[in-house]
Amino acid sequence: MKAQYLSEIMDDLGVSKFTVKVLLVVGVAMAFDGFDYMIVSYTMPQIAAEWGLDSVQMGGLSSWSLLGLVIGGSLSGIVADHVGRKKTLIGSTVLYSLLSVLTFFSTGYGMFAVCRVLTGAGLGACIPMANTINSEYAPTKVRGLFVALGMAFMILGQILAGVFAVFVVPVFGWRVSYLLGGIPVFYAVAIHFVLPESALWLVVKNRKDEAIAIVASMERSAGIVPRDWRPDDILVPPPAPTVGVKGLFSRPYVFATVGLWVNAFFIAAVMYGINAWTPSMLLIAGFDVSSSYGFTIAQNFAALVATCLAGMMIERTGRIKGAFFAFALAILSCVAMSFALGAGHAAIFAGCVFLGFSVNFAITCPKSLTPELFPTEFRGTAIAFTAAVGRIGGFCAPLAFGVAVGAGMPFGQLMLLLVVPLALAVLALAPCVRKETKGVSLEELHGAAR
Image (cartoon, rainbow, N blue to C red; front, side):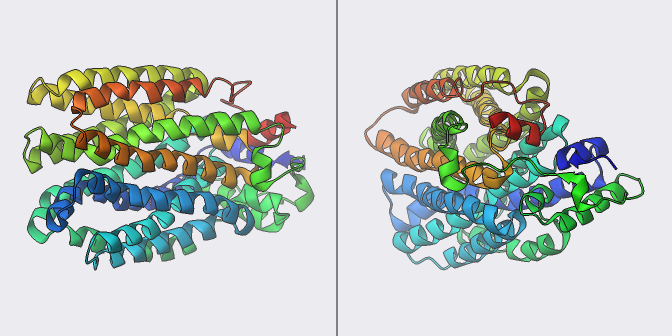
């Protein structure tokens, strides 16, 4: 039998029941993650009213979660590259679920902040693991789409958080939202039994027999009789000379690392700032709770559509062209929203939808670059650290929004200021990629970096 890279075998099998199962299992975990993160934004006004918080403290309600996302995100990649993607995903899901339940018992701002930092550590570990697993199981021709669909599940969870906030929180109070956030601890058990470990990671760890067993399952799901693969039939890419965090700054990867980190910082700052403050922004503008949450839900629904479309677009136009188009659209949406805020309900509704669509379109287009530009030995570390740097931007943004609002800056002016970080984010991508990564297997990209 001809020796092949694992990605070549997966590409020959194409999209099967096996790969769809992986996408769905990881996707549901991402949906729980999205719910647990976004519920803070929807319960922010009620918490602030109960505890008498000022605008800066209100922004902090969301930022504490993001501080945890930075911690959990940065550590999860290192852990995953050593113990595996599956174990890290399960551990992170259990962590944020249990801490969400503890948040239910918060007696004040301090306890809430501690709980959300620890909850955020679990949430921050979950997201990069989902992206890593999706990128390592997706056939090459749909790798970008699978990564985008994983993010779409997270946005679906954010939409469900909004629906829950509209219909349940006014009746039962804000605390019940965090009690519900404990449900994923049971889902972690399902992940243990249903989700396979990354076969690419197993091969790199010289656990080829386990990888071959997974290949056999993939072949059966594709409707063919499993072939008699032997360990020598599975090719292993040349090892990276430097791995871990040092590998991110080694000669083949340093430009990609810096560019992706700058991009992640600024686009996350924009997205998390908008997500955290949109409900409160609309309430301050004079809308009732149902209307403001309804606008935000519509914004997130537009983000869901945008994420799916972005995944399809980058498979046609390529990663870089798609990103430049998406960021131009995001800049336009911020300008449009700045004018819409003073133009009535219909204009604000359209502005929210356009803003949610375009910003998430922009944040999704570069998502597949991180798993594509780094080898399996430290792919998890690369994805996790890139996400963690983005969360630093996300941590700063809600607080910065709170300072600006407290100083009396109109939201229209705040929207216009977002043009600056968006421009810096897209410019940072230019030196990242020397050649287009669309349609190139992970092993080929790995070898090209050597």
